[in-house]
Image 1 (spheres, rainbow, N blue to C red):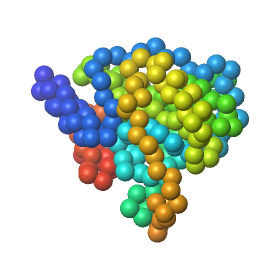
Image 2: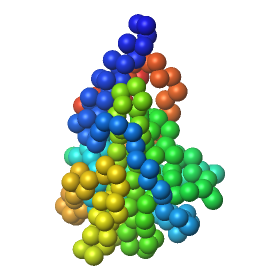
Image 3: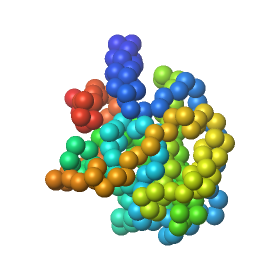
Length: 220
């Protein structure tokens, strides 16, 4: 009994810290089918973040973009952004395999302790993409939501942006009011040094989890 209460309190503390930079809602995730006939080869490469739902690991990050690339037999996803003169490169491995649906499964890690999957909902491969994720916590009856509107360039036409809005608005619980604009101005993209952070999977959920103000996950 004590262990169950201890785990619940630990999860609550973790969730409260994530609240400052993560969309949370009560209830289960809706049924959101990914894009059909997805072509991974055409999707690989760099995608600039135009707008996004708040994510704690990208908090205050400007000039952000995602890089999807093969890493041996897996797909590596890099979240790259600049914050206070430092360029951060967060490296995650997904369990996506060629031939699967357009869903990149993410393990719980020091970067994303929740392990929110990334589903490609729509893309034309050369201009824009809409990526969405949802992960349900049964113990707390809450879901964690994530979303990105992406572009192959650092800006996106109004026509493409409105098309992306329509995709997100069609999803249960994914209100575009959660979106925040990602600055891509040149003066904000300057950095003095680079910090590369590789994902380390979390396998023991009974360990206490805390997140510092700098967004670093510690396992005690």
